[in-house]
Image (tube, rainbow, N blue to C red; front, side):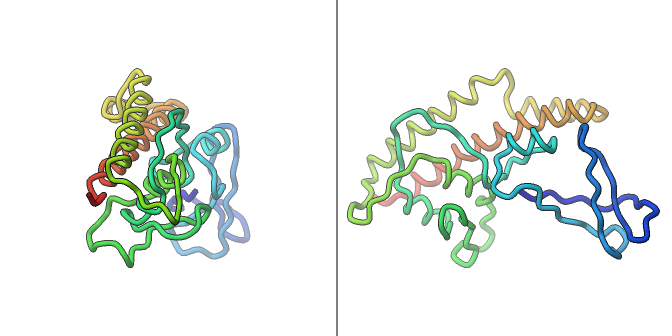
Length: 204
């Protein structure tokens, strides 16, 4: 999981460094001779879902490629077909969007879609091709379960976004909490959209 910041202030050390707080954790970032306002990319915990990032560092992301949705039904979609539709390559632990295969201007696939490829219930059998009607039925069931998850929240993603806009000076803890639940909803909504695109591209 990657987060980026621009260096805003430096302390009086023999080398340049940036210090800031995340909740009760003090994290000291040290950079040797960085350029002024150089953007730094920090790898916190590769392969961790938002829940863990939130617990340890106080932030989350709507496009975390490692986030997870726990499905309880029996519906499954064909793994290779889903990967093909979104040009996702590699092994499960190394999934990435193969932009060489994508259509120019296609911006739909992001970390959330990669996470969907990992977390959606799937089946795979090299000798058995997917049946479009069965795939579409599975898509509908998975989408319905996602909608049920969203319905359990007291607010929608749009309402959370409006709430954040109305609280420009909110404490960081409150802001992080609202963003965490917002990012969760945005992820689930993205999965619903990905499933819709998938079923639309399944050949009869």
